[in-house]
Image 1 (cartoon, rainbow, N blue to C red):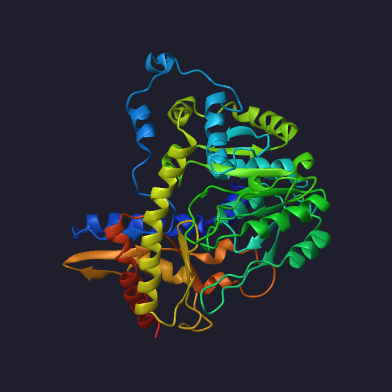
Image 2 (tube, rainbow, N blue to C red; image 1 turned 30 degrees about the vertical axis):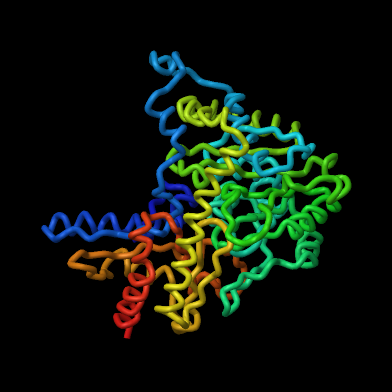
Length: 449
């Protein structure tokens, strides 16, 4: 359904299809409309394909939305704001970072408000990678990586290269060896290394010692390190919360002077505000922040209304920020552990990534299905025709195929047997996911015989 071509469209438009995160929803909506037109009882899709959390947002964000404080906004005077965003909104993002740092941490942080984390990555890629269409200074990532970042680099025409992580039979993604990163840096000469400490899509937690070593490589090779810390504080093992901002000269001499660090920030997950679309690019390099601001003048400014909502967190204390995120950590830890255990009970031959961080898990079916299995085809089956009846109600399940999370040049994409599941639906629906997945997979495999 996505193959139509029009000679009047650009090559980019004619080659594009929906992100794997939105693919199932796009198809299911057509099915739901058809069912309604035919008078069928509605079928409910449990949508765990995209990380759109259903938990209520922080009460101060909700209060500010319902009761704005800015007189100009209240009176309907909605003018452009500053390109980098308001000082208060930027200070909120910096305050959240500092809530997880020691009080004596000397790092100076500079911020620019962006349209979510993906907007921040777009600015970072434009600022650090080579010219469009060239192989110069690519973005170095670790497979699998967040599909939106891969898509951003490709959309901008910037080269992206990858080192591999593998999901073993026990459900562990390996941490990429320091030596492998060193070889990749020497081979590709990237403009930046991207890491995701609280990993999307794998649910893996990167340890601080590993981050320090990756930063050392970047320091020695005079390249930037970009860290997606949108899930800061959401970790489920007995480890301190990792961050590139934890590193000081005591850990890595010269890191403070080098000014090579950038973090991608977002309120989407840790403050349950996906629809607010508020993120930030934070750096210890003031000149980079200034250049990023220049680059963003084309788009004039972030939403002043959304920033006004963000500013409601300005007076939050370090303790209250940590306490709020700790409550989310307790919720997700219990839910992810239930999901993992239930999948292993219902589908013992499935390989399920062990949840250590963020809100995701990967299910790999390579021990169950044949070589011709394609996860996207299974996802389409669920969206178009698969259904399970539970207590007289029709359900299907929307998950994300993993092919888009891998940057694969040669050979078979491991994502063809893998799907990502996001713990984003209300808890009662999340508890249906393993059963729905098992029964829909059985239906799909039977339909192909």
